[in-house]
Amino acid sequence: MSPTPFSSSPSVALNTGLQMPLLGLGTYKLCGLQDVYRAVDAALSAGYRAFDSAAVYRNEAELGKALRELLPKYGLTREDVFITSKLGPKDQGEKAMEGALHSLSQLDLDYIDLYLIHWPGTQGLPVADERNPGNRAQSWASLEELHCQGRLRNIGVSNYTPAHMRALMQSCKVPPAILQVEFHPRLCQPELMSLCKEYGVCFQAYSSLGKGELLSDPVILDVAKNCKRTPAQVLLRWALQQGVPVLPKSSNPERIQRNAEVFDFTLSDTDMDRLSALDSGQRFCWDPSEVA
Ligand SMILES: NC(=O)c1ccc[n+]([C@@H]2O[C@H](COP(=O)([O-])OP(=O)(O)OC[C@H]3O[C@@H](n4cnc5c(N)ncnc54)[C@H](OP(=O)(O)O)[C@@H]3O)[C@@H](O)[C@H]2O)c1
Image (tube, rainbow, N blue to C red; front, side, top):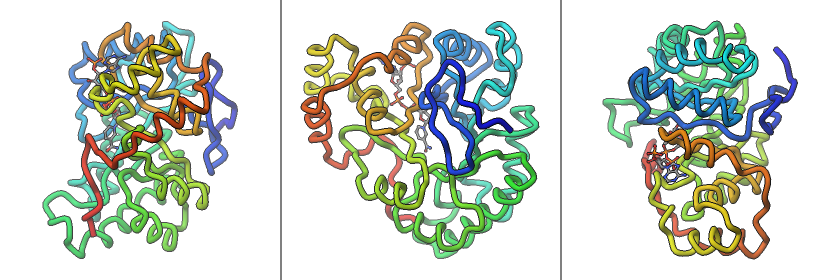
């Protein structure tokens, strides 16, 4: 295990001492070997060194295969990339060990760099069901076991609320390295951000582009025009400038390239404030606030 930073990609140190690239390729809705292969090829070429998958995306096998075939083309090895996957809500609880081992086998990897509990609930249970906390705790214990065996180098959670985080921090043996949540100017998540800071957990953004919908927001368009950048670059930079790692998804090689050009400019304090003032609590993705 090397704590060495990723060569071509700025990274952040996690509480395990390991590094994670600040920019990763989101892969939700990338389906089939051809699409995954094309996106991974464009991403490696553009300098991405992290890839975010999940059991529910049904592309772990394709991602593993694409990386195995493409890494040599760029003179890279397994150690040069950071691969994330997530436990599906159907495997929450007693099936968690099996679910995580299935991810390892689908990706065909000896280890996964980061494995997350995807969702605080359990598929098939009502959100308010009191069995949810127990199932989460059981999943976490399985992830801790695989972490101790070195098969999941970092473990973390996704879509946890402040209450879910507090409960986990009180009961865990291994603290989560990451909390991955929806984060963009219309959903600034101040409580979760400060909780993560307090606990030493890295706060990571998903849906930074609002699933593409924020790209036509007038304020974002105006900031982009003034700094001669694309709206997507502005949204990604807004998160990065707060120290938040991002995972933009695109299936388009040109956009994948452009979305990576986010480390060579700075947004002014005024622009940062204009963007943060858009916070309205709007979500483009699922809302975990009712999950017991
Ligand atoms: N943990 C969770 O529960 C969770 C939930 C949601 C997402 N995620 C992760 O976060 C990743 C990103 O989130 P997301 O997929 O929801 O959405 P996103 O990254 O906010 O937006 C992706 C959408 O924006 C479009 N797009 C990307 N770059 C663009 C550009 N430069 N110009 C114009 N359009 C552009 C993409 O279309 P094209 O593909 O056509 O370019 C796609 O429709 C996911 O892929 C996944 O890995 C995690």
